[in-house]
Image (cartoon, rainbow, N blue to C red; front, side, top):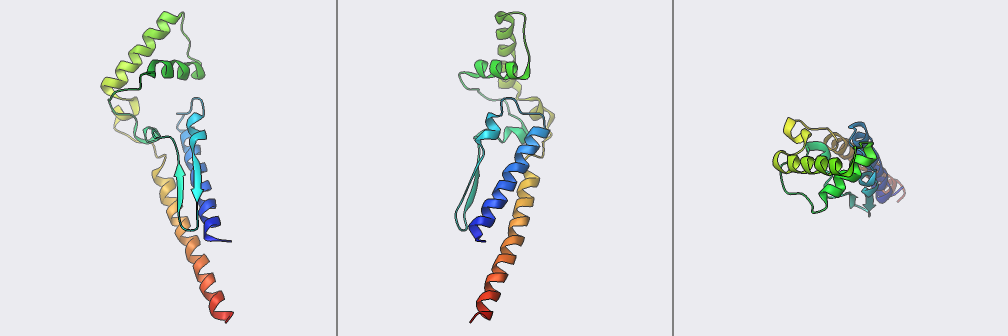
Length: 149
């Protein structure tokens, strides 16, 4: 086993832990965000990559501008969640109201001042596990080099 192998395994565990926490927080709609996570590793360098907006799963979204196609994003989200309206006009009114609420006040999670533990604990656990595994690996390498000479 190499350090790259250890790092890759631990990054994959981290990725899985984060995805499970996102699912448990009931914040999944299409699964696009979950699919955006990927791991990369070399001997002593690793990354867990994901969509730029994933922080909103832990803290919510503060009041701010939204993408130009935000109404379309909200409508796709509503359809995936099974939210329907009598007609397109009411659907558009709802999407526009949500858009302006988010621009002015942010998301419900943000407004609550609370956080969801999506990343904090998994990252701490990852760091702890990785340190322990690297210590074991390098102790073994040192002992092997001492006793094989």
